[in-house]
Length: 375
Image (cartoon, rainbow, N blue to C red; front, side, top):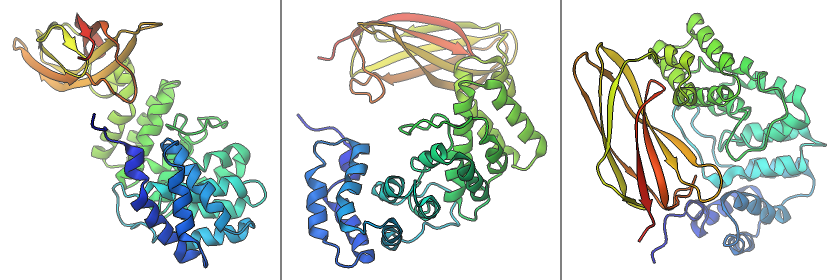
């Protein structure tokens, strides 16, 4: 059977390791490139994506000075050119450039924290150090927060983004922060006005994290930012929508109102699954119609309820349509949803499932369906 796409092998392979070795050779005189590449590649098969980052650092350490101050100089000398600071969209070097952050935490955080933070500052202008600033926040919270406050106005947008991304309460794959999650809001007050979408997307994601445990703080901050007028209306509108996406899926009335949607609605809805039963790996096709006695802006989602052989059923909300229902007219909707058997975030099991249609946070129709095992 053909192998599926492997992100870890796409990012870490003989070609990319050779490229890294070439960069290191330029900064570390006498570097044994062949040995480094052989060591790194020999350990990839047994390691997943994030573990491969640590493994690269493991293999690099024997080639570097044992003195961290010298090591930091070697690491900086090995870095590729800084990313273009004039750009405003996403731009990263190779994922493998995380190793300066790993080594900064391992060897510099305790006895050489100032030099280690400088190393992170330089490294994040090539590849984001969002994972590696967090141990410094936990170990040295006050002085690291003071440094981040300065970085929030740095000329390089990668450095500014690090301030928001590195302090997110629920950063994926990252270590938990011990600081009060409300403290970094002062950084977001500055960064929300940024001209780089790469930064404002992080700000919106940061607010979305906070919304999961303090919706009032998020709504209040958005109101404040709309009031001060430091960001253009279109960008702040996009940020608001992106920041409130979890609350919208939950049907939070305050979030819906901020985006112009009512949840005290009078909607006639119909939902029909076209293909019954459905097989794992195939497509779930459904059609829906909405009508209302008055013109009504609608945000339409659908909720899939997944069968679990043991424990509580799963639930996931998906976007369907942002539109307007005209009084006395039907809004027709159709969707083809692939029920992947190898999804990365959840596993499908045969058995009874359900789909609900949600309009402005209110479930208005639903239908059960049987999911069969993949043939």
